[in-house]
Length: 386
Image (cartoon, rainbow, N blue to C red; front, side, top):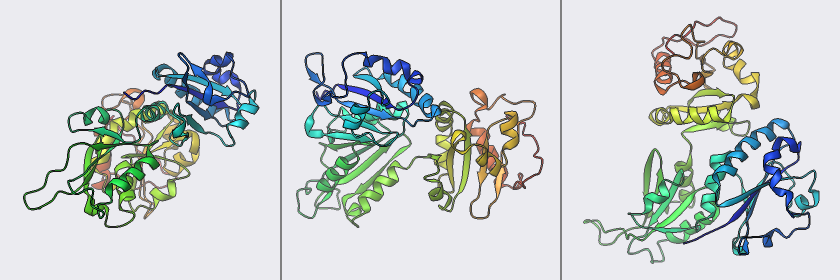
């Protein structure tokens, strides 16, 4: 069985007190001149080191500290450490830490080199990254044990090669291998030992590629994936597109230009966003053809987004979910009305988190014309269905 041991570390350049719990393990002999590829642990097993670097802003440090604490608790196969780059300047320079935040994984196997982690700085994503790193880039599965992989990652790609996969014109095996090597840090890839059976109407079988997700699966035949040079990348993009998008300054123009109305939920904490995303997944799938569901970090956008979406009163009085529908094509905005006397009652999760039923009722009211577009400066009626 493939086994990997890591040392997971955070490099920080902010007040070390905000990360005191994770910096303490560095009391032993890691110095600026340490050869990290050779630091050993129990029975001289080489460590791999993943290093997260935070922004100088104290808020970023606190946020990473919270997530890192969860990683420390859950990553039982890894030794998790944190380094203050204001104290270990030479070490950070040796590891070419030049931008913040950055995460890197130094593999136990030197042939795999160094991976730069580019995902979210949140515990579930970091832990999933470590699980992928413990597996081969291309796992081998059959239809019986593929379920073990499905429960280990959000998106799993499984290739099934037909009897004619060795033909020169069947390029799926080589292209899939290349895809796996490119995206192994972000998704799980496997090859099934089950050979595709020939259909009654065909004299030979064809290779196929299936992506498995928590909300369904998609299968493409090799012929479809060979239709263009970008077909395989387009398939990966289709499969990995989240049902609920975290809107940021970097991606907002893309989603504003998709031609769909946006259902925004403004959140104050990472935990709140995770809980809302879980709650709304099924609804986002149902309406995905017409609506894009997003979450918006109040810490990143401040009052700007709340003001633009007519949610200032809800923010000021903490009255109900910070939910609004925006139609970028005509500028219409539909803020969720502040809740009345029944705030926090039936239909919400903890802390006023809206249920999927409440959000759907709100959407249907808009579709049926029961809720008019918001006009800046107008007083909004309260909403008692919560």
